[in-house]
Structure formats: structure tokens, C-alpha cells
Picture 1 (cartoon, one colour):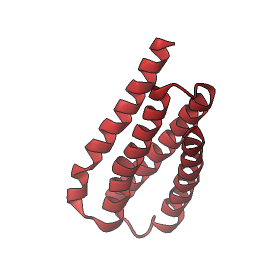
Picture 2 (spheres, one colour):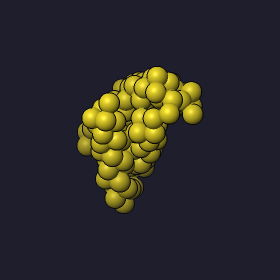
Picture 3 (cartoon, one colour):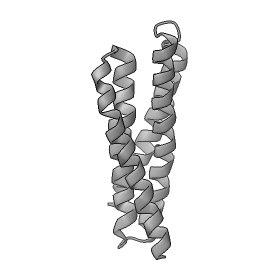
Length: 123
């Protein structure tokens, strides 16, 4: 399972950089300033949590029987999909109701950090 988290970290790091470049070079003239800021927020949180995934993947490799780092990683992954994913789609399509999904992704991010903190406290 830890190797899967490492794969998710690598894939999401790649995707965050690719989407950031796409936004910077391909969307500047196509999106309003507001939608461009939304896209940039998606990329920013995507990249932060790709790095967080890398950290919990490494922790999971070091502590293979510990459930909290794995749980944290899967929560970060869910947050990337729900938070960043909904913002990407909102920015590219203008579909506003997708903004209702974004806070669920934010809660997944928070829960992931909480799991990581509890793991640290228990060590």
C-alpha cells in the first residue's frame, strides 16, 4: 500500500506541474482574472498536497503497520480530487454549482492533516 501512495504522490506532482504550466501558458488569454485565480488556487493546493502525499508515503514505508499515515494519504488524495478537481472544472467550464463540492475537499485536507498530527502525537 505504501508504494501505491508513492505512485499517487509522483503522479499528482507531475499533474500539478503540468496543469500549472497549462494555466500559465494556455489559459492566460482565455479565462477571466477571477477564473484564472480559481485555477491557480487549484494548482497551488494540488501541489502542496502532492508533496504532503510524498511525505506520508515515505512515513508509510518507514512505519508499514501504522494506519494513520496511510489514512492521511488517502484523505489528501480525496482532497486533491474534490477540492482542486472541482476548482479546475469550475475554472474551465464556469459551472458554479461545483463550488459546493470544494469545501468537502477542504475537509478531506483538514482530516488528512489531523491524522498526521495524531500519528505524530502518538509517536
